[in-house]
Image (cartoon, rainbow, N blue to C red; front, side, top):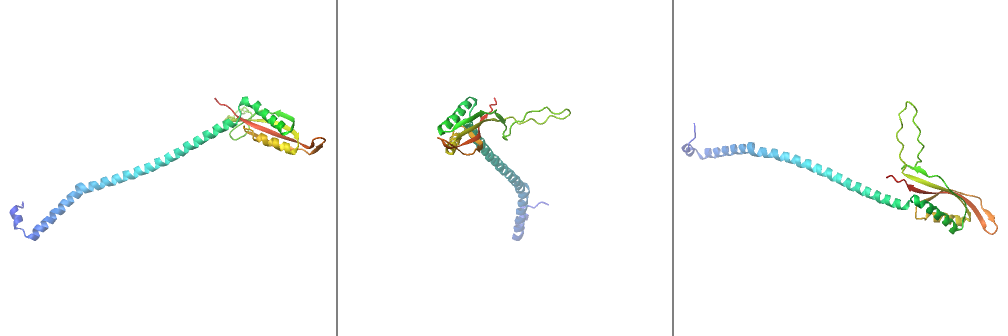
Length: 216
């Protein structure tokens, strides 16, 4: 049975108030079911998306920071490589470098008894000499390829005689040459009193320089 306007007019104030409350509750329930609940679901989905995006941003920021550090490390290595190339002689400069060593000896007053260049020794990054390759035995797999040599060690066996101070001065001048030169395997002989020269000793050492192997 339909409720008419006259029926509403005849209702008591308490009934009218109750009816209004019921209508309000029904409208609120409809709003929640059809609008607010849907909005809550969308908000929850958006919150999850925002959290995912924030995690992705943090991860990409971390990767970007590592990339910047990697680029800085590579640039530093390139600079160090360029500096090393300037300090290491090339093939054409080796004779001139050894001439500088001989000149340093004459300037410090030592006398050369031996100046013997030795064969160049190829070296890998681990600074180990490259062994000669041998064919694998029959029935066995070939071993892993040997690392390619990265640079060459160029030694010269030197024996000089002179006063203790002049020999030390000679080693000091060699160490201060603009190119990389190392003095190793130093031995000192017994001191001898030579007439007209005073006390002299004989020292033997190996003077080494290094050269990059150019890989075109």
